[in-house]
Length: 168
Image 1 (cartoon, rainbow, N blue to C red):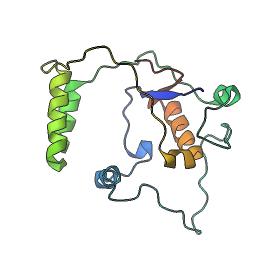
Image 2: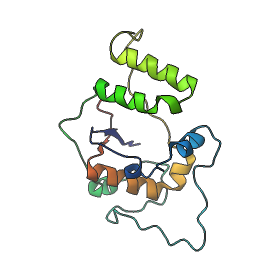
Image 3: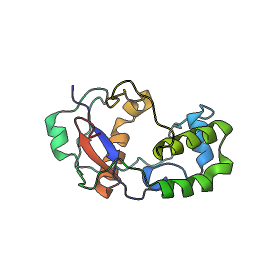
C-alpha cells in the first residue's frame, strides 16, 4: 500500500488559502466537536468545480492510488525544505493570539516555546520515527475535494510532496 504525505514548505499561508474559515472560533468548535465540520449541500448550491481537473477521480479514497494517478499529481520538492521554526515570528503570533486562547492552550504553547528554544529538553529514550495515521472518515467521503485542495496547495508552494516516506 502506498501512502503519500506533504510537509509545509515555509511559504506564507492564510486560512483562506487552505479553505478554512477566517473566524478561528469556527475551527475551534470543529476541533472541540461543538459544531459539525461539514454541512450538507443544499439543492440550490451549484456543484463545486475542481481546480485540478487533470487529476483522475478515484472510486475510493480509502486505499492507495495507482502509479497512473501519481504520475499526473503535481509535485513540489522544494530544496529549501527545513524543519526549523522561526522562533521570533512564532513569538509574535503567540502574542497576537494569547488572549483568545484557553488556559490549556497557553500552557501548551509556553511548553512548546521553551522546547524550541532548547530550555526544556524533551526526554526521549530513543529516536522517534514519523507517524502515519488513517484519514478521517469525512476525508475519505470527500476524497475528491481533499485531493483537489492538496494538489492546489502543492502547486502554489504552500506544501511540498507527495512523499512515499516523510522527509523528517
